[in-house]
Amino acid sequence: MTNRRLSNSTLKALPASVAVPRYARSGIAPGIVHLGVGAFHRAHQAAYVDDCLAAGEADWGIVGVSLRSPDTRDALAPQDGLYTLAIRSSMGEELRVVGSILTLLVAPEDPAAVLAALTDQRTRIVTLTITEKAYLRAAGGGLDSTHPDIAHDLANPQMPRTAHGFLTEALSRRRAAGIQPFTVLCCDNLPANGATLHRLLVEFAALRDPSLAGHIADGVAFPSSMVDRIVPATTDADRARIAVELGVEDAWPVMTEPFCQWVVEDDFPAGRPAWEKFGVTMVGDVGPFEDMKLRLLNGSHSAIAYLGLLSGYDTVDRAFADPAIRQFVDGLWAEAIPTLPQDAGLDTAGYTAQLAERYSNTALAHRTTQIANDGSQKLPQRIVASALERLGAGDPPAHLMAVVAAWIAACEARGKTLPEAHFTDPIDTRLTELGSRPAVETVTAMFDLAGFAKDHSHRMTLIDLTAAHLERLRRGGPAAAFAALGIGSEKP
Image 1 (cartoon, rainbow, N blue to C red):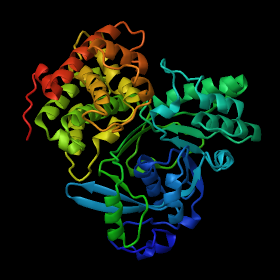
Image 2 (cartoon, one colour):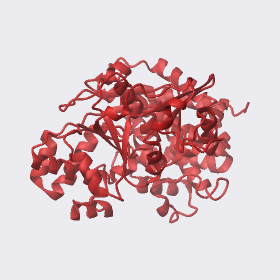
Image 3 (cartoon, rainbow, N blue to C red):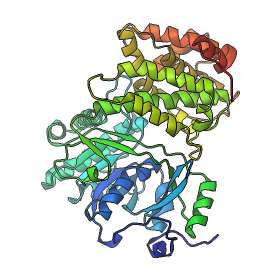
Image 4 (cartoon, rainbow, N blue to C red):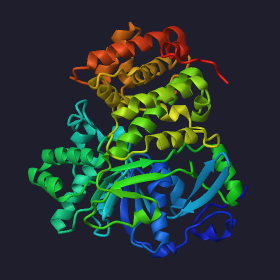
């Protein structure tokens, strides 16, 4: 294996089978700052922007910002920001080098540089993939104003730590300098993600300066978006395989599937790339698409993850190949589909068929532990919201609440039948207080910690349903839970 790295200077030496940027990177100007430059962004938005740059839209290069870890910068800076996107299916693998990330910054190391990039008048869009927990919401959905990082950013606006602090300070500086606000495009799995971030940022800004809060409330665009592409964690085996294919080393290639979807509300006062030319769906209201993805894809992903972990499966394709889990997912979809908007023209049958094909992709090796992380933050919009709507319509959410029970059972299994830190959750430090309790007490405590269905009239019904599932999981594992749902448990 060669010790040479992927970089601008080695691009021409790559095999002809590897797609490379079809533009001169030296002529690209930054127009987008992205917060949270992880694997998903590099498999999704950065690839779409790469297409636009190849089409001649040279002023939309990306400045990537890591809000916490320097790992991505350390891997990609020696490579001039280049990385390999490996698109894997059961039929084979295609390699593409993406060149849209021009610069990489690490916020804790140099917050001033991040603020300078955000304030640069060339920056017209700021995109975010910072995961649900980084939005620092309280149990009721508003800003957690007691969070230490929020308190720090309010006291030290020139040295922010959070996305809230960086965006608010940059918008304040742009207003003072007479520079048009950038558009803030949230790409995380939050309900009405643009409106949610807008509300949180206005709440944060109001704690600093009411007039600044008014400016953000009335003068800054926050379109919502829905993103979808499965991006498993990169392994050392992936790195070794890619290096052999390229003939040079890539410190952090990204693995992904052929499918890619992006639905965006078209509200960009400062301009945007022509994403629609490359498959992005620009709409007036992303809500129906977002709900379909959250409840059908993300919801079933959580189900596969927790039931898969409890059944001994380490990847999605292996778990989904279990007839009982597959049948459970079909039942879950049958419960969730009626909660979606019925007049939005959604093709739920086609969508779920597509999901089944994606979950069966044996080349992707999407690990159940990766999906299992942060369940307390993910399940409210993926599962609980559908369950509450089912109950409101007089229909039982049996499969839906079994997913919540499987999450609790998987949390309990860590350090026993699962490794101690097999997956993590923001409420982990408080779970030690629970100990071994009867199922209904455990479920009530978990609902309290996670804020599930807080103050909702159907809360106790959800708790009772979840507790019944948890008792079965504790007593007889997934097979007992499946049997109660009328599902056979034979394995292939």
